[in-house]
Image 1 (cartoon, helix red, strand yellow):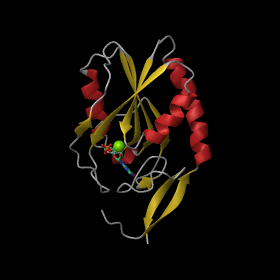
Image 2 (image 1 turned 90 degrees about the vertical axis):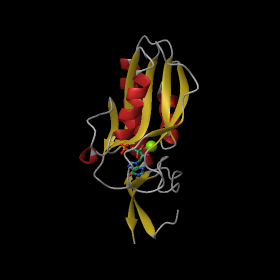
Image 3 (image 1 turned 120 degrees about the vertical axis):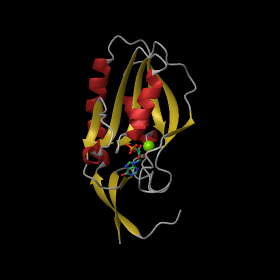
Image 4 (image 1 turned 90 degrees about the horizontal axis):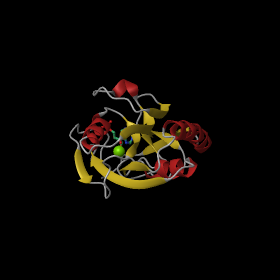
Length: 178
Ligand code: IMP
Ligand code: MG
């Protein structure tokens, strides 16, 4: 896709993200105490940086799997129609599962994925989202843990893209058209 000219204003620093992940990891370990192997499911592609940092703070046995759902296409607006583009490789029945999402926006993606995975009989299923835009919600869903609540701005960085750009920024920034 073509991008109109824009700049990125930093919203959340790499340092703040790292500090928040340390705190979240403590809560996650606590909640899954006694689990012999947690299945951490990253939603591609936006969660790849977050999941990498998160699992390295989880001082417990984990398996990592990925699922790709698409609701945004390449633009800035959710299509509200969620398709599974790539399914998990492993089974999750009777397993403890943590679904890792980059942003909960309208809520369509996370609720679709949670409903799908619940049909597979996990022993337990919790969710974590790095970012949450509560004012944008159209489906009533909330992640078990949220890194940061943010206003209704289009953000990039730390795995999150604008038309496949800017995933490699180490911080979260908001897109401002110039
Ligand atoms: P939802 O289905 O509307 O909740 O959309 C969630 C997905 O939309 C996220 O996993 C992101 O991939 C994408 N998304 C939502 N907000 C943004 C944003 O500000 N920047 C980039 N992608 C976003
Ligand atoms: Mg996504």
